[in-house]
Length: 395
Image (tube, rainbow, N blue to C red; front, side, top):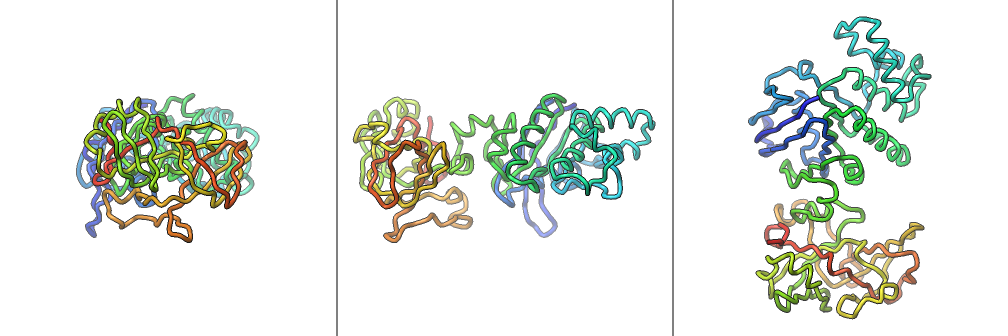
């Protein structure tokens, strides 16, 4: 086991494309770190640089206390699990798991013992004589994991290992992988585009956008205290509602004006964000998580914490309902602050040009399609961002 350290790491391709910008991450010994972000953000490139499959253009990379910039992949003492499993179809499960040990000329008796131990851990003992083609997707993924485990490496690197599995199996396998990593205590770097996967598996999560590190923190801190509007909008499902509003009132008792309706900001929240005082009388971006909205008839929310609108769509999930509603308030794209409009996805709008937002309501709600509704807001859980920089407004 070993820590993995990236210091000011850059990746620039021969055509000039700058894929990774000054990446600094310290992955602790035994930690499970997840790299997450949209397609093209550089997460797989970063992982491949750790593996030695991509050259580092500048910066330093350490595995343990050893500088590995110029160390060949096979000499880095890491094990990689790929998206497509990369199993040999003509070999048995046992031979696939032990193949790297065979190449390393480990004694046959030791190979057999280590393969059996890995198979027992992964519930593959009864499948050791089968070929990969005779296994389910989840079993093939376990074989790929077994091949990494028997190496007893300093670190595991996993590149979207669950993306080929169906939804139910993904949930099962992510729990198994996280549990296995905790049991083994091996430093693990895991790449995924699925933020739910990232949040449920990682000790810490590293969010990337366009090759820039946005924030690295525990899943809960990312969710509750995003550093910028990109992290706020990317983490969470359904996504945070982000809208441009005017901040009025006073520093001690501010209001946000949403679609012509004044909503009081919880004074206790305002007290924790002294930087808000600089935005009174100006435009800000307010973020509201769908779960911080509810049918006001259930919560009996006071009028100053209620928005009046109508229901445009309802998605019933049994334990909750997802309610879509229009507001004449401009949305703020999570890409707007740094890349004006370049990667922005046009927000859904209704026939009147109003933006559609989303709430996560109790199934006790009497919300009905096309009917008026009063939506109560937990204004103590507002998030505020500077519209010019996208950074969270705090101090």
